[in-house]
Image (tube, rainbow, N blue to C red; front, side, top):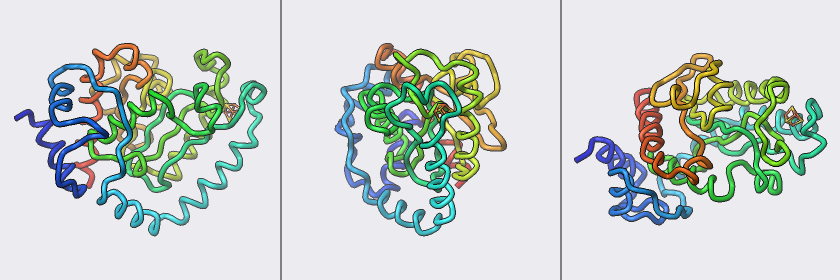
Length: 249
Ligand code: SF4
């Protein structure tokens, strides 16, 4: 059997799963995905029983991080440091566990995120949930945020001065959470955290370092919705992230 699948089955067992399912995916669909086929339509999975226990344990251990993140969130909600404050509906600070072992960093809020104030909702968010679940990480166990906290109009690319003004918020988030692994999805997140202008194709499938933290770069889920042939390589990047995480346990 494929060693990646073996690792996946072991991770699900560690989370207390008695039978295999992945957010509505069957074993056959997972095998199709692993073999290079396209993913089925994503659907959200209930948190695993083991995940709920872990979440409670981490919450008890991280009151200082919760307080620090709340203070930073209040600062971000009032931020007017760049032009995007004039066109945003909501600041999308990020969400997840204050002591998460994994932080996912994307590019910027889209229309749905701007409307709800939550990161990675909609189809791309559902696909991200699936990718995280495929390596045994329910969304509740990670922290998810973007480089920019406000939506660029018409989803245009972030401008350099916007990244420069907003990135300090991200750096402080990561300092507070202090994850064991970072995964940057999309070019802007990867280039900002790696400090490189290389393409995402050149940056993916290897381990970088951000301020001493291991960092994996890969394609953005929104790109995968348009180019599903990249789902398997991205899944392999998530497996690499899980491998790095396991090595630190
Ligand atoms: S994008 Fe960042 S820097 Fe610009 S207004 Fe929003 S929070 Fe402030």
